[in-house]
Length: 79
Image 1 (cartoon, rainbow, N blue to C red):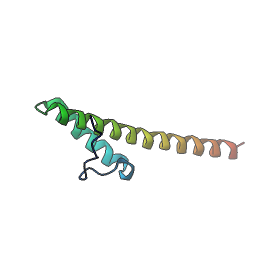
Image 2 (tube, helix red, strand yellow):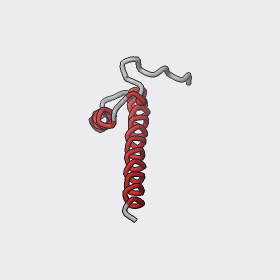
Image 3 (cartoon, helix red, strand yellow):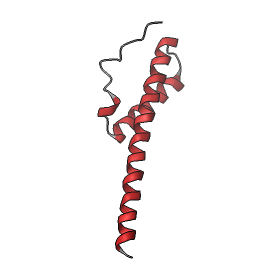
Image 4 (cartoon, rainbow, N blue to C red):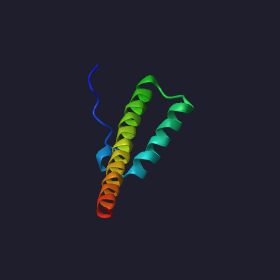
């Protein structure tokens, strides 16, 4: 099966904020749970959902790293 080009209407996940990616992911999950989509549409939704989930995780990982770094700086300055 040939690889399908990304939907031009769907922005690249790298350009999305955490909130945008999370909101779109919620919408994708709703569509999948509602059913009624063709197999091809369901696969496209699933793939988009996976990309959105990865983007959200990247934002959360980055936030965790920033918090850890701030704690280290604050801990080392109080010694």
